[in-house]
Length: 624
Image: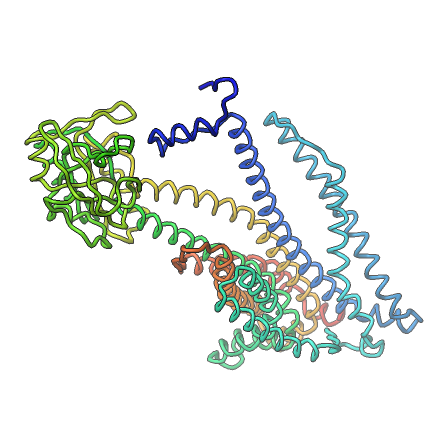
């Protein structure tokens, strides 16, 4: 519509409100444009935050891979580093040498990655007719971030290499672990753990979202730091029942001899499992919370207006009651319309007839009132003005009118109801027919109630069943349709998140494979001695694979536990006042994370195990 000169959109709203059109919303074109811009900006910001979070996760995983690679490489180059020390190289010179090497590798790798990204963007833009913006600043930021991550990751191994004694490095030791500062790190974990408990207690008492966020952050950091201290005792406890000198015990012995390497290999799987567990736990909890809120505010699986004769209504009701998972069904005829007495400007409502016994089959469990001849039953979804509890309304039908007292309940009912006796008085035996806003005529209201807690597949089967009922072909309202749409949308979001997590899993897989290759090379002398003492090629391969699987099993289990707790903690940040979370977990999904991680770990150990088992013992002893 076009406003008169000098009139404003607010004047129109005030006039409509005074005329009784409380539910009519009027929006100007300028407001629509602003709303669209706000929605698009909010969506872009949300997408940017999500992508940034996964980019940080991928960078964190890459940092662990780089750090572990340089740490193992420094140990394998112990003789070379010791020789440089004996020739006069200072400790700072060794650190500079390793960091310079890391810088050049990071520079060339980053440039190759940036070129690949621009190339893929060009190909996608050309094939999909998309406008692609090639931002030099984005490439420069990516290069600087990659250099910073690489240098920070290589710094600790580089500083550790300067502590290697030249005499110890020139011996046949296969691994040198500086013990400096480890006791102080252990002591720092105790106050850190106490701080997490204190912040969590404060969040539980106050309900502050900020404290919950801080507790989540501290819990995540503490979990990563505590993980290496927990992994080794957990694996030792789990392998205690194994027979002496069995493959499992030999694998556990290798883990005990190289706890730092074991923790470095498992940390990547731990983080991946924790993030996946947090996502699945959050998804299950949010989904269950939405389902509970929807079912609480709209208790009917199907609710809609139809046109049917008395005989058709009775047949339809029996047919609906016979469907699987249906606990109650009601086809209520239209008795008339109700208007608050003396308030013609207030919106009138259609009124349906149902006996107390029939309505009890579909009534919400929280309903504390029933239908009688002196009252009209009104739900929370009815307008507030004129429909207050105890108010008087006039019910008008095709034959007469009658005044009734409003019985308003604090539960949505999807309609207003009177007894069959009142319906007979105002409209006789034939239901009244009205026309909806969409232009369809109707004379009955259909309500269907399902068993609580049914699965998504059972809901879909129910929708398929009622879609074959001709009278309900146009009815697509109710919680069952809302829940199916919600589940579809959440599944799309979940698949998008899991697709992004694939990058982190691939980095984790590469890191594990890289670590195992370096470990196999570093332990070539020990493996050669085992071969000389009679260990077969197959058992050596099984030993390396078993060690990897043990580390993976412990890391994945700890990651799933930590991720589930962290996910539930983070959800508390988004809790709004008056809405409680319905906590839920998906045991099958969590078990699937562990199984998938074990498969990836086995795949990562396959090549290193084969390569180590094929090295001749004499050659390994000679090279070592």
